[in-house]
Length: 229
Image 1 (spheres, rainbow, N blue to C red):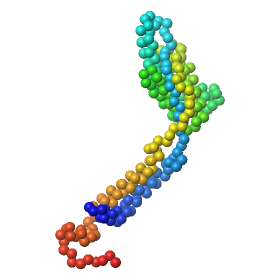
Image 2: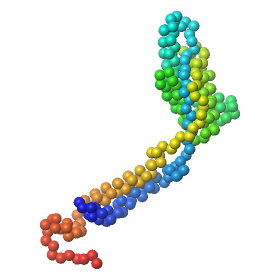
Image 3: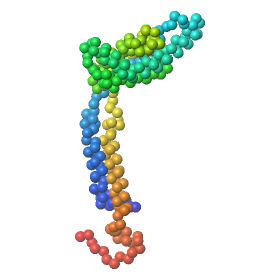
């Protein structure tokens, strides 16, 4: 199909292209404000080392003591990382904040927290749109982690795990994800390409003959031609 013919199809079926494009733009209107003025998000990242309290029955040799200490540290980090994502940890953070005359829901705290563990390093992530609130929650989470683990891990024999923060609580702005910024444009492009596909499908299914060349392609003789004007 020649380029001129393609443009003729697009010009003739323009409304099939416009309809899905307009629908995509209308669906994007609720999120358009996020593109023009995206919500500011902030992140706190704190890394920790952790270990169980030393056992009085530790092995005598240095090699065994060292191996057991590092193995226990890795187990402690894995279990503490899982605890950070639980409702019980969020409740402890809320209790810490209430003691400082600050009020926040358990559900909100759980939504802010994520965690990870690699070898013997525990990482706590907190994300929120309120920088001041985020700092308060992060400081309460660090205190909870260092002071309240003994209430949830019976293997600690009533003593809190030895948790040492490697980072200070620092609130940093998060960049808006590029996918979120480009989402309305991508929806509009999908609408355009979908409309173009509909236009060519409608042209393919349309049995109408419109040009002299289409008749000549079918091998039909042309007796006369009526001008457009």
